[in-house]
Amino acid sequence: MSTHYDSHRSSRHAYDARREEILQAVIDVCSTEGIGKLSVSRVSERVGCTRSLFYHYFPNKEDALSAALDYTIDAFIARLRNWNESRVFGDIEGALDSISELLKTLVLEMPGISGSISVGGDAVLYTAFVNRVAERCARYMCESTVVDFAEHHEVLIDNVFETFYVLISGLILYIRSHQDVPVEVIKEIIACTLHIEGYTEKYKDRRPAR
Image 1 (cartoon, rainbow, N blue to C red):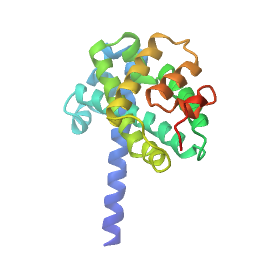
Image 2: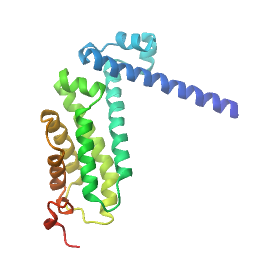
Image 3: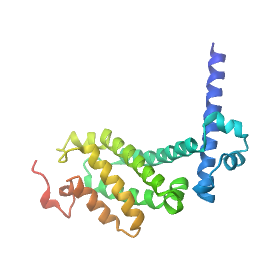
Image 4: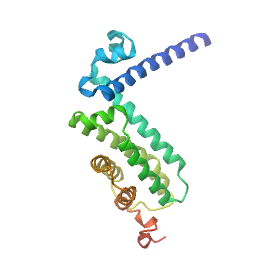
């Protein structure tokens, strides 16, 4: 019984590893050659696998590209999760400082496939990518950071998920087109949009009454 289970688990891990190799190859092709050069043949050559193996995991290159975008967004969420878990309780301004710095870094250092799309790819695809990033990040924030905040402070915005979605997508597009924007400006945009600027030193006169 145990041998069968171990064999099944090993097989599953090998399956996952091969799929991940293909996704990484999709990202590499887009990064080095441009998204317009993405093809099943190029990906298969990079992985060192047959086209039939590629099709075993993905019906076509479009599905592989979509999965690679999600794979890239997973990295965004992982960085966001690290930020959330490292926040210092009660230090709202410190959290605003660090999330503003992180967001600018993530946008300007968009790795691989996302950078390729934004620089020379399909504008429609890039917009769809930004929307997916915003949706997943907003959902994560609403299920974690906002819940923690609401335990100790009043949430002063309605339509919380929608507000985070618009804020994140807007900042991504703005930072991409205004790469020299100061982190302090990003911080103020976030704070004022969420009505938490009163927890910063600059706007302490706006702090909500306890």
